[in-house]
Length: 331
Image 1 (cartoon, rainbow, N blue to C red):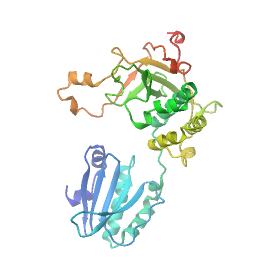
Image 2: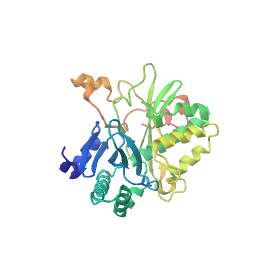
Image 3: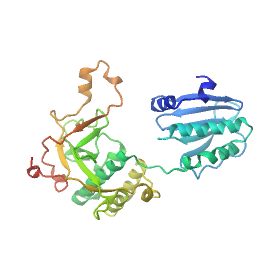
Image 4: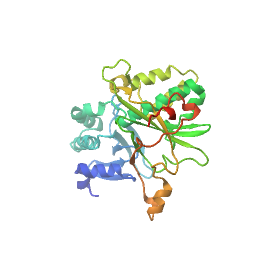
């Protein structure tokens, strides 16, 4: 892509690059020489420009960072200005182009950033939050985690909770695995995010635990995600550090949580456990391989299932008291 095209990206083209798997480098200007690195995996845009003047201080901005970079075989060093653009791709790109315009006008990088921040300060100071889906997902997982802490002890429960580590299943207990899905819908409709998410591990039963919540409004028994985090932390002693580290890995920031997570939730119904077996409506790797010639090229599978009409299972002993008993389903 030539310099002019790199300077005049359309929003739809940038979004396409941010959804791609490979990184991309685009030249932006010749004098001074600048280029932009697009990193889809991290959802960042990085402006690389010649090192000139003092290192700018951008520590006050959550979405900005800057480093000095030495490239092997090159005579000069570079400044890398990194912009976190998760959910704000074109705005971040526009900020970078504003900086480039100021560099071309003869400003130092520090001065160029300062000028661009006049326009984009609010965007780059914006506090980051979990998505709505991540928020209710964590809310549901913490409910089950709290039940396990009280039932099998905090250390065993913490060892079993693997959801924050992006493992295939959210909980791995001695006798079974569990995938926890939380929804705000009246029906038990859940989003499945991969072909392996509902694939049982060899020789191990797998349950889908379906949790339904609804907005609490002014109900006194409602709970925000922040309140639930605090309540669960209050159950822990020896496992606090591991618990906090896992939340931070998800993007949880205790400093901003009260401001960002104000919606209060109530349980809509008792959770139910469903056995994921051959009759369960899951799409797995073998299913894809049976209908697609090159199954290894199928990536990013996402689908929805509605388990409302399915017969739920009797929950394992560890989930008794959290999930509804089969005899109480009333179906």
